[in-house]
Length: 529
View 1: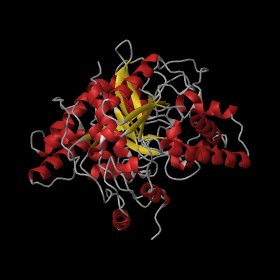
View 2: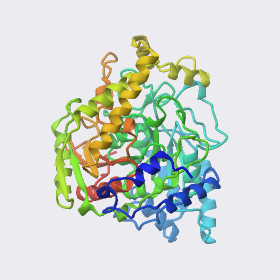
View 3: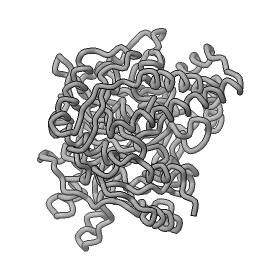
View 4: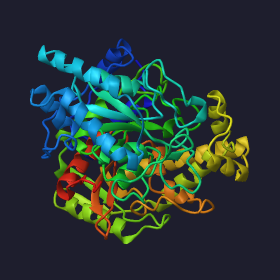
């Protein structure tokens, strides 16, 4: 049997990146996963996963504890699913008028599902590791029976007949949907002058740490409501930083898994096309332990997303931090980066010095610049005709004004130039793989600043360098990235996260390092709202 290229590359990974951190996967392991996945139902969890770990969360407040801890309490009979659902609904009702994060609720169905979950639990019939845990879901992901707009007018009353694959998988594991969270149109087109998750249907979302500050996007509603204790977790999408930016701005944890690990079926920008490998789905939570719990649940082929690969999930608990080689940079020289962000990355690197084999400041600036240049050319190559096709598909005739204005200034490039940019991107990706051979993990900023003000002049469009120079590179490479809060702005108000990056399929390393840094920094902190 011919092995997929990505799996073959994983088997050929350098020794220092594999042996010290987790057990080796054999060809027999991989073949067993492929065979098991081939006969699995489309919503099934991957054949190889890790056992649910005990929670290390010390929170005693229902709406603020981790999903892992809450699930354990429900299974132990100390909290009912109905109690959890009512607590989260009450929290949403108390904060959402200000946050505007949840744009469509499913409270009636959630209450019925919670009651059914409690009856099943009383019989010892547990659905899975998320039994009774309340969640929200980004409005770009289809939810059966619940309006899913993707923030575009053509879908303002659209009710999907089935869940997106990732939604189906967490529901099968027992999670209960409370509502949908705000996002820009098609996750790409926000409102001019509004520096937050925003759209013409629902308006803009607000940051729970400061209502005048941005949630970032495009999973901005998700970041805000999870940070504020209105949901145990959400699932976001990340095309250029759309999980990581909101995790940074809202002080939570988020993961962009390795490209093609998680199926995108049922997301409004799904499988296929020139940008296929840039898009990834992942959970957004308050605690890193929940990323380790939820990501393997949503991973693995569904046989609809034609790119998704059956790659084993390695246990973060098996990673030996003492054998890791760490790289970091506090500024990339492209995006303006303030001292608060630089100091946060430097502090994280100092914490790693106490446990890692080595910590080295190393910026692959030329490679990152080439990735950025190629990404910019590819994104604008067709003058955003791809966006027009999405609008036409859903019957949206008047789409986001900010996108309309952008299209007026874009000139499509030739097919030859597009292919050349594609070649340049692949060359830079190969060079990045060569660079990471010296290390096991990279620490760097998510953005150049903490959450900025929401309102800004419509003419002051943010340059792509700010959005992509830190995050977009790792959509282009497809590498896994975890964001965790590691610091606070100098005024003591705004959270600052950092990116923890590893080579393809090494989410276990990202999560192990994120968990350690969370233990040092304290991670998520209760917002003032």
